[in-house]
Length: 251
Ligand code: G
Ligand code: G
Ligand code: NA
Ligand code: MN
Image (cartoon, rainbow, N blue to C red):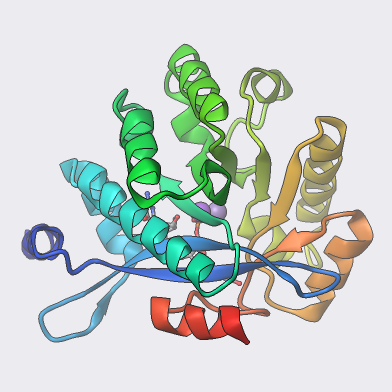
């Protein structure tokens, strides 16, 4: 309950922070984008784990407001990178409740218009389970987003249904290979097979691909060898504060 009060206060006082994790070309190290990740401190200034406050936000419905605040901050920050001379696409996690909200697309379009940001600079990360909740609603949502030029990715791919027929129905741009598979791919045969299968799926369906949770050179090298060219993970950078990400962008 205390955590819920903290979350309510944080949102009411606009004190939610957003960190940014770089996405890079694995071969060249070129910066290709950034994932926005919500961060919150308690009254003592200690970090509260998103693994605690995101599920709570989902249970209480506060995730809709939280998600809008992250979207706004991420788009403002993306605009600031552009003003520094760098076109860096930003991706924002969208929870199931947000994705189910018919107002979402118009709210995003209004935000992009207000900030005068190109839709191509925004990507929405949606989990498979959120996409599966209502298949026909999802299809309509994805086609509205596509028509608006906003890119979509399936987050944590491989952990849910991952069915070929759904992938064909859901018109997304990017598959994100879940970090659990990347982390175990060199020690677990099954995880390696899943990574290979996701890569070949993306190639055959003409989808872009990104691997998350890359923590060492061996994982990076193997992903390149298997044909996955984009990634993110602690090997390259942890999620950075807005100020630190600006420094990163400009270096
Ligand atoms: O940042 P970290 O990896 O610790 O995040 C933990 C979990 O919280 C991840 O599943 C991540 O997707 C989720 N998360 C972080 N920020 C957001 C956000 O702004 N919106 C939603 N829906 N989930 C988020
Ligand atoms: O659910 P989602 O894929 O959005 O989760 C993203 C989370 O993964 C973020 O909280 C981020 O902090 C975390 N993360 C990013 N890179 C790595 C990594 O290399 N290793 C681990 N363990 N977590 C990572
Ligand atoms: Na994500
Ligand atoms: Mn993920």
